[in-house]
Image (cartoon, rainbow over all chains, first blue to last red; front, side, top):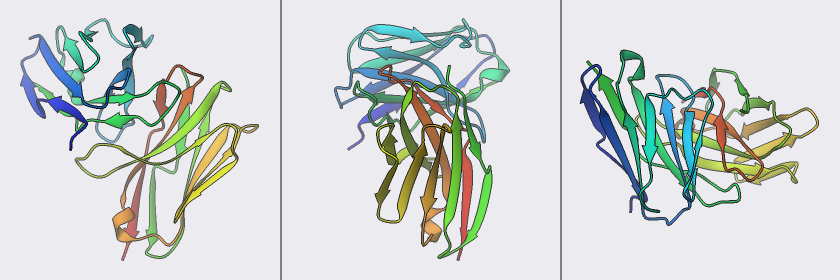
Length: 112
Length: 112
């Protein structure tokens, strides 16, 4: 009954090699988020889509990009991963109007 | 963006005791305050939330209080059980933008 699905669960990529993480949802929520969570830290908002409108956080590096081709799918592209980008990446969805955010299981990214 | 501070970072209680976790926020436009529980290796899950037009909300052993003037909100867990052991995150969301900003987390350990 998974509602927010992230693939893959674990991703190993080489330093500087582009990588894409994916997220899909069955909730038909119009808002989708990407968070970066490093060990023992809070999830940090990278960006979110409100419907088709893309909202970037001011401190999100240019190295991070996102695509949302339709309501159900959202992608996180890391153009040139550095060692500091190793983290858990969490996708979440919610309906508009400040309601509960539902999280996926996350993708743990390792950069070698 | 919003700045959410959370204390304490770790909390150890005896089974049956109460636990209190406190958060402060910086943006007076924040109007939705969810609390998430994250067990090791699992996704964050909502346990309770409160909106800015309410001062207190209770759900069985869990309660949340909000002081808008002081810009702080707290999570109260009574009669703690070992299965309450997890990391708890507070969050604040601004206006209708559905942007969730998280506190740094509290690792709660309930000793049997």
